Image (cartoon, rainbow, N blue to C red; front, side, top):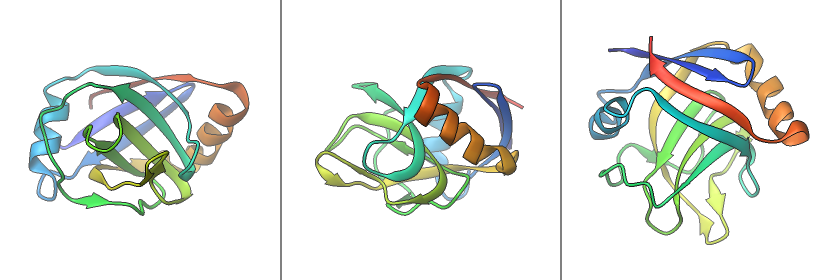
Amino acid sequence: MEHLKITAGPYTFKARLLKEEAPQTCAAFTARLPFKTRIVHVRWSGEAVWSPLGDYDFGVGPENHTSYPSRGDILLYPAQLSESEILIAYGSCRFASKVGQLAGNHFLVIEEGLEQLSSLGRKCLWEGAQDIVFEAS
């Protein structure tokens, strides 16, 4: 599997797994497909949406981690300083939480549907939580 289909609210995206850069994170995440959750607009990170996952344990540590994802980058933060979460950047972003700056595992990059990302961000900001599903493409 090289790609995932992501359905977030009314939008559909195609994302490439970064298997060489984050092999453990990709394996842990794809083992849980289809992965269904909800996303909301971030509080501290700028132009991004996130899914707070609490104590959900993916069984991975830091890998290909970054604090500055680019538009279309998807990070998995395994619970460490803060709760476990998924973050999707749609614009300028510095990944952070109430405990300060974080670095998440960059394991997916959106390749199709980038033009819809800003609309998804605005929808989450002004209309609230949206369902999201990650599944095999």
